[in-house]
Amino acid sequence: MNEIKIFSPATVANVSCGFDVLGFCLDSIGDEMVIRKTDKKGIFITKIEGYDLPYEAEKNVAGVSALALMEDAKPDCGFEIEIYKKIKPGSGVGSSSASAAGSVYAINELLGRPYDKTQLTHFAMKGEALASGSEHADNIAPAIFGGFTLVKSCKPLKVLEIPTPSSLYATIIHPEIEIKTSEARAILPKSINLQNAITQWANVGSLVHAMHTDDYDLLSESLNDVIVEPYRSQLIPHFDLVKSESLKAGALGCGISGSGPSIFTLSKGKDIAEQVAEAMKAAYSSTGINFNIYVSKINTQGMQVI
Amino acid sequence: MNEIKIFSPATVANVSCGFDVLGFCLDSIGDEMVIRKTDKKGIFITKIEGYDLPYEAEKNVAGVSALALMEDAKPDCGFEIEIYKKIKPGSGVGSSSASAAGSVYAINELLGRPYDKTQLTHFAMKGEALASGSEHADNIAPAIFGGFTLVKSCKPLKVLEIPTPSSLYATIIHPEIEIKTSEARAILPKSINLQNAITQWANVGSLVHAMHTDDYDLLSESLNDVIVEPYRSQLIPHFDLVKSESLKAGALGCGISGSGPSIFTLSKGKDIAEQVAEAMKAAYSSTGINFNIYVSKINTQGMQVI
Image (cartoon, rainbow over all chains, first blue to last red; front, side, top):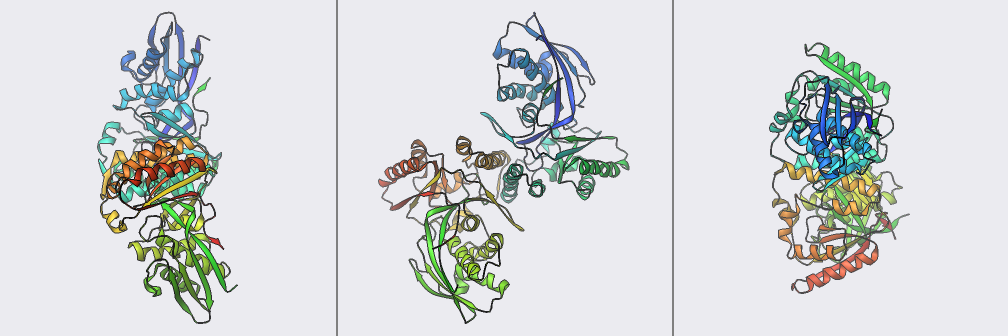
């Protein structure tokens, strides 16, 4: 096999209570990439469609993660990368992670799978660091593993696959405003109230228990963020309205996707997820801000060869 | 049934990463209580053996929790309580919780079980508040529910029963020094570093996942406390030595039981738990401080009628 075409999914990081550790994978939103073996050694980005991104491998997140893998694998070949970018950079659903994770996933396939998913996550984190300034795995892990993931630690890297209840759907609204990850990080306090932290870790433990026991009510009660949302929601116009309307429409929970501006909800069943989409649409239509809305099953497979 | 004798177990709260929310129940350490219906309405503590505790119901944790139940149940009778106290007050393994939980459990049995375990926990928290100054359930919940519990929230009270891997044993050392819960609380900072909080909630989520998947290695990696232990361990002489020696002897993890001074470890299998007990004994024997050591299976039943 000398060429492969893949779907590299968008992802939702943090998932309300799990700032920096939880994430899940989307089904219907993602980039496509074509990766091709070349005789010439090196990583060559030959095509980028959709958004304006750098072609130099060292300046492109897909390139940097691929180079990290190459440095370890030292294969007797190189790779051309074509990126069909559909996830808007800065939208808060893991755009850079999809690129970083997609290239290493595809190259690993073409090399005969010498690396496991944790190793691929490790390489992809090098690309993510180029985009965000620090190595995070909360979007990369769900893109590579699929489903819900908990990044227990980055050093050493340990990713846990949390089971996904089968009727779980996400509804995402992407308001077309820009929030830089660096800005969204800068707004956070360096220290937090101990009582709030206790609430947060009770919710994380409770969410993991809910996922293992298919308990949608408990999942709903666990989807609360008393640490980050009070700060970051200020950066997203009409966040409170979208949240209250989506909960009224039956969503289990609603929060900021990654560092925003996208807002995610989780719902039990596709019908409710679509009602939530309608409610979000109604809430945002009068704001004068352009937006997109997506409904997606939780993608338990992650990356896919297409 | 007019009289009942029960075993009310000792418990370990916090469990390293789960400050204020996690707890588990011990098997071989606990109080005994005899509760007897009386024609005269009210709660009458008629016997206390083992330790010097108040006989007035309003000043005794077992009395206060029983009165809280009585106020709700309004039964056409009263109850006499005999307390055979074996858990030393202030030892850090839920002495007051055993009393508070035992009386309401036993009265509920004698009344034909009008209340569920969550309601009993709620009543017992009233007794706990007398002892510690605030309503906590992290010792009461495991005493009443058995096994491992996660108190998701106190208001409203929500207790989750986390599955217990079958080979899990605890080893507890109780150094005979006194640490007041109030003192152990006062030493804690009101605000904590966000990065440390993230580490902590990753560990809580990871511990719950480990319990659901019988993953002892992951359980071991999750039993870390970067928030509370650095402060409270200063109150326990030779804590670091006990911890390092018990880990060397094969313990999965080691931490402060509740607010101390007891130190708990968890181990896979009784043999290792007993080796850990030997290592703790060797470590503490030269300190000049008296101590007791217990090895206990995790008690998945909780309260027992005997």
